[in-house]
Length: 354
Image (cartoon, rainbow, N blue to C red; front, top):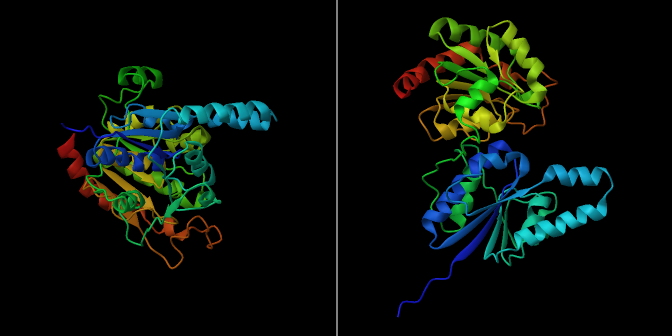
């Protein structure tokens, strides 16, 4: 008589942001490939749920409605908030988990693993007191020379699972590409264009605007490509300033995350700073030049279609604590000519792909 193998149930919590949700997406696939008979539940913040909504290896996606929780807290409606937390707890406990993994390592994400009722709760790194809610913490183990998704790869190795192939996944947009074209009045399916991602809320991550103008004009002149600027709503005015002097098309603030992802997917090439949209390009293997200075989350993207430019200085990476009095030399020393030189090499790959 053959005995059936009990299905194991795993909960993964990675709430935000764009970069890490995308970089962590291979965790689901590798767990399913290398651990027999696994049921996988993933918890993600509402703002980023569209990135994972159709992941083929996630059996259940639980969406945390951060917007509603924050609204109730600001309005002082604490009893309603407690009811929301209780309802969320019930949703988490629809299944009994053998293990809960917190890929974020923050107090709230670890709290969610505790709410799930899992007896084994493991956090990747620990900050904000997250160790209060977990039974074990695994170091992020990030060295100076890292590759894409290093901390998540290390976690898998500690769980006895292989860490490759590292194939990132992004769910397709909810609307067909043709409808997105109509909405934006931009026929990107038939256009040849370069995407640039110049914006971050952190000024020390940004590349000088005049550099973007220089590169955009050279791309238009040398390669006959349109330049498309992507960013968030807060970047709309800055995007229009760059566009006004270069003839670029600024879509900053006009797209959802999934719509921006589709535009990146169909781009001939992308140039961007350390921001979520830049990292999305790696998932699609869109030829990409990523510019790092004050941060260097990885020095090797693991794909030939991506080039990392990082001019190391004595003070970098400063991990968002600059000591340069606003000069941000780590970014300004990445010259437009250096980027254009790397672009020349990647354009050959882009011509073969598209």
